[in-house]
Image (cartoon, rainbow, N blue to C red; front, side, top):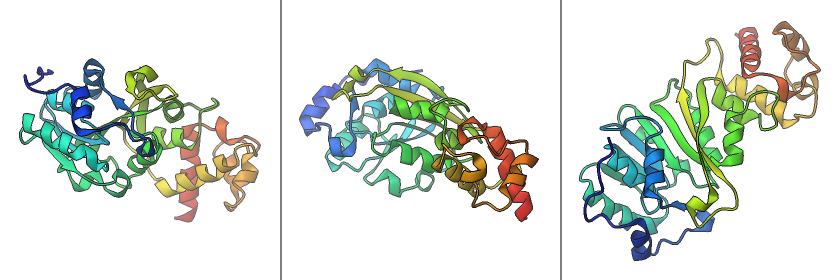
Amino acid sequence: MISPNPPSLPALREVISKYGLDANKALGQNFLLDEQLLDRIAAIPGPLHDQQVFEVGPGPGGLTRALLRAGAYVTVVERDSRCIPALEELSTYFPNRLTIIEDDALKINPNDYIEGNFHLLSNLPYNIGSALAVKWLSEEIWPPKWLSLSLMFQKEVAMRIVAKAATKPYGRLSILAGWRSNAKIAMNVHRSAFTPPPKIMSAVVHIVPKKAPDNIRHKTLENITALAFGQRRKMLRQSLKPIANITKALETVGISPTDRAEVITVEQYIELARYLDALSA
């Protein structure tokens, strides 16, 4: 249940003005100020009362305060030093519930800062969103410590994450998200909701881990998809040619060597990776 704002909690626009937090284009910043929209995003994973949450790039703390209102214990990582005083002020309204890390999210591991399981929610900076998603989806230990990812992306990137085979957005990111997790678009967000408004639409993707397929190594699947989609216009027998005996391997698992990368389902890529791992065992 979402608790009301503390009486003295300032409006986000006041926070931005007080601390001079104009969005920094170089850091990919676009702030969300609509409190009701922020509360809806915070509700995507489900009830967060007394749950641990990790957030990247909180900026002036819009989503952070929504998470705190939902009763979560929140750890944020922010590389923009201008935002730290605003976040420290926010922490005074929610004593002992907000931990602030001043660092680059690409250089740290949330697992090092939170004990036990946690949810990860972020209005991701557009310039690092895909890299962070790949990082979190590529963890070797599975299931991961994160219980869910609820992440804001450019709409185009969001569509690539949830895409199915034989569709235009389908690619390596789709397979990375689909082979051991379930991903869906939880919410579309109009560009006008941001300050400043970006040129493109956005969407929140919600990802929940599932059991990883047996007898398959992440690096094998990664290698196959890198080769296949690196030359996606070529037939698989050509794009996967660096893999020994690939034509026989494809035929054995029921994939036509003349097919192209985008028509092969996640399940078929898994079967191919499993077969190749078995050969090298």
